[in-house]
Amino acid sequence: MTKVWVLLAAALMLISSSVFAQENIKPGTKAWTDLENTLRDANLKWLCQGKYYKPKRQDCVDLRAKYWDDQFFEMNPGPSGTQTKAQMVAAQTAGAKTYPDVVRGEGPNPTEFKLMAVYNNGTFAMAVDHTIFKIRLNAEGKPDFDHVAPNNRTDHWYLDETGKLAVVREVTYARVFVKKDGEWKPAVGASSPRPPSK
Image: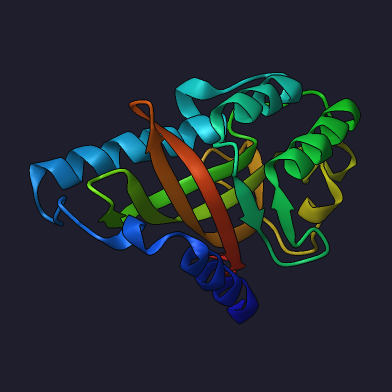
């Protein structure tokens, strides 16, 4: 867990110091609340949740490939470690061939989204969320581990609030967004495992 946060801190230090030169959106203001809502929506879009749901996994991969910033990267514990945008798109495309269908609500579900910092005249923002990974159930009412990626297989799981999906993993995600050409784009993601809620 500490390793992920150290890597995120190191990555952010590589960004030009001019990014951190000014902060003109302050917590508690309407501008802050509006930006937090905009980024919460961008987070849902990135993860193909809510109104951005895609029943075919490849459609979500294609959306991400266009939506993520060109320099996007993500850091996660485990064998995948740090991956560039190209590496993630390739891995997710391979996964979509094996597991092509997605039921509504399956996959990463961000909750408790909170804007933490805004810099560079409001074009660089950092947020955190609690992401819950959900998978479909099989005919016996247990997690359908035959139709999910191996990193979502676990002995500890519980039913979500709908009773139709199994929660198999929970993480805290640090999310970084940049504003380019008037649009907020995901730039960095870093996860740290958290203990199961149940």
